[in-house]
Image 1 (cartoon, rainbow over the protein chains, first blue to last red):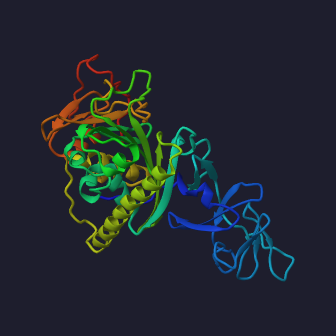
Image 2 (tube, each protein chain N blue to C red; image 1 turned 90 degrees about the horizontal axis):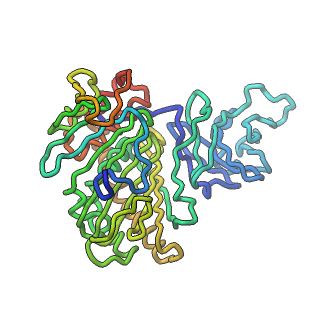
Image 3 (tube, rainbow over the protein chains, first blue to last red; image 1 turned 180 degrees about the vertical axis):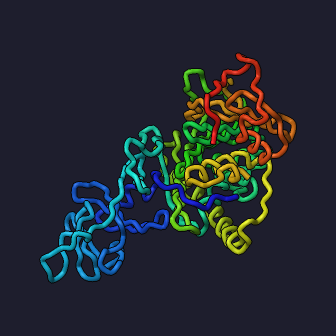
Length: 353
Length: 79
C-alpha cells in the first residue's frame, strides 16, 4: 500500500535558499505551518507560523520583519529569531508561554533543510546533492505544488518506465519501459538504488537538444533514493559506441545530468515537488539552461497533472483498495517499506505490497 | 561488476552497508532474482512475493557455501 504516514525526526527540504530572505515565507510541512526568514546577518531561521495570541499567520501581511524581529500583523506580538516573544501590545509583562516553536535549520546544496520531529537532530545531517552548487555544473531548478499524497510521487520517481508513456516527446522513449532494472536496498544506510542501463536507445528531445547528439545513445539511469526526502537520478548519455567510464572514474565521452528531487510532504494530501537539473556540459549556454528549465518543468507538470488525478481517485476509494505490482515496481516497493519503517508503521513488511 | 553493466557506478555513491538486498531482472525473462544479505538466492515472478521472502529472513533462506559471494551475514535478522 502507498505510505500515508509521515516519517518524523527527519530532515526535509522547506525551500531553496534563494526563496528565503528578508520577506517571510510560509510553508506547511508534515501538517506543521512553518515560517521561514533570514536575519540581517543572513542566517535562515524557521519557526511556527502562528502567533501565540490568536493564531494569525506570521507569514501573511500585514505581519512583517523589523530588523531581526517578526511583528504579527494582527495585534503586534513581536518575536525574535529564537522564537521568544519580546513585545506584547499595551502591557509590560510578557507571558512565559509566549514563545514560538523553532526548528533546526541546515542550508546545504542550495536547499534550506528543516528538521521536523520531537527530538533534536544531534549529529544527523541531511543527505547531499553537491552538484547543485558545484562550479563544474550548471543548474536549473523549480518547485511545483502537488495536490497528492507524497507516496504517489515516491512511486512515480522510483519507477521511470512511466517516462515512455507520460513523458513521450520529452524524456520518454520506448527503450525506457523495455529495459529491465536492477534494484539494491542498503538496509543499514536506508538507501534504495534502482538502475536501468540502455545500450542502444533513441535520444529523447530533452537530451538531443541540450547535448547536440544526433543519433542513438547509450543511456544510463541510476536512481539513489534517500528516504524520506531526497531523490537523485544520475543520468549518463553518450553516443552509441562511446567508451564507458574509465577505471579512475573519469568519463570524458559522456554527458552527465544530475536530476534531483526533494519530496516534501506538506499535508496528508499535498506535497512540495522540488526539482533541479544539474549538467556538466554547456555550462555557460543560457539557451541550454532555458531549454532544460522549460522542458523539465513541463515534465514535472505532466506528473503533477497525473498524480493530482490519481489522488482524487484513490481518496474516493475504500482504504484497502486493490493494486497490482509487477517487476518494474520492485524499487518502489522497497521505498514504501523503508518509508513505513521510518514512519514507525507497525507492519513495514506489508508496505512492500 | 564492470563499467556498463547495470549497477555500474555513475555519480551514485553505491551501497556501503553490510545489510544489502539485491534484485536482478534475469536477462531475457520475466523473472527476478533476489539475493538476501545472508547470501541466499531465489528467483521469483512477482515482486510482492519476492519481498515477502527477503523480509522473511531467515525463514526459507539457505546461504550458499562460504566464499561463493562476498555478502557478509550479519548476526541479527531484519525487522
